[in-house]
Image (tube, rainbow, N blue to C red; front, side, top):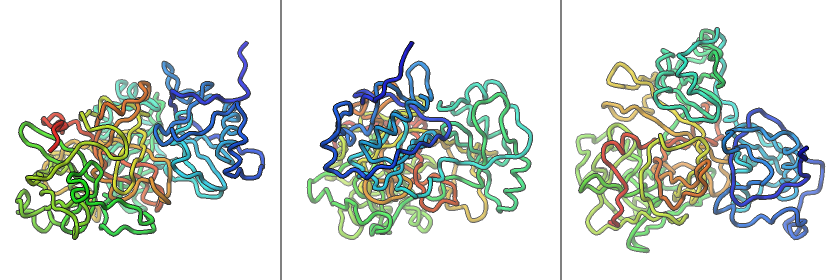
Length: 506
């Protein structure tokens, strides 16, 4: 007969998994542990090292929320008690709540980012100060009230908690709901993002929408309009309430005669984003950027798009930085802009905050739920993200045109033929921006680099680029500060068009 260990042993190679239902445990009352108390740890607990900054993972030999060959498993209350005991001793955690895909931790004093893990036993760790409100993203989507709906069996078979469905499955779901604008699969459920309407009309529509999908294990919810409420860019002077003034606006061309992924890029209007990576298509070499940084110029001067004297890109601040080139193309109707660099401008595909180069672009088909990624941005530095879902825009009858309600036009790219937009959904670990590193405005354009596969371990050296940051606040509109989720436009069509990482320094 097996027995449960009375302690937890931290493991080096991690396994990942996410929790299902909310369970909250609170530690016994104890005085907060001071920094000097770390020297009194007993030998059964391994010391917390700087490796958290490298891998962001705290794993144990005894249990994980991900078990290879079995997928998600809930470890049981006995392990949750042991986990709370460990976290209480190591991080002065007061309580732990399982709420897939997160472990929500409360503390009197939240540990600094560099000294705490991003994931614990595979769950994204959300660190809250005692008494702080729970992040709204833990529950996304309103319930329908009509009878359950039955879908084709091949659709329901592909819908399973904590497993990414295929693009074909999500597109089929969009066709089932006439008023759907987007469909999001997030961890354990579907969220149907409806064409925006008044709140009264939305509440009435919920009475006509099905509550569940028959013979299906995932939940079904609805949202009035798109979850992604804004495309994030900012003037080069940051809002100190959001960033505490901590950004890297270095002009690397002046300092080092070259610049890198994540460096500050400015438009002539003063909007700023993060540099992507250098890509090539045949003889053409281009730097990827977030096109919406030049939205205003496009609206007022679209006829000059592609002209070397317009749509200028500057490395560093718009007024004092170095002009690096101009936005020559936009890939279809996506947010991927392509900058042609001026002669003599050098860009190196080497990330500044972690040791790898951009080496390959990867499609959404090669990404699994719970894969982990890194971004490097001038407003965040190194930031870890975890893949938790996928989002797709509904094909429409007008050349795949996207229909939006009045007042929502800012969500659209300029007129043209839209691609079948697919976005990955990724989780950060903090709902409110307080200090670096956090997801912030102007991360748009940053390359998403896969760092760990769900089962395959550390893959950062592969330099695999899964996409470019697009929205940094995938959230219900009613939430003002919650920013646990963000989205990234995947590269399937970009790769199919012949683009690849440029392996030659330019």
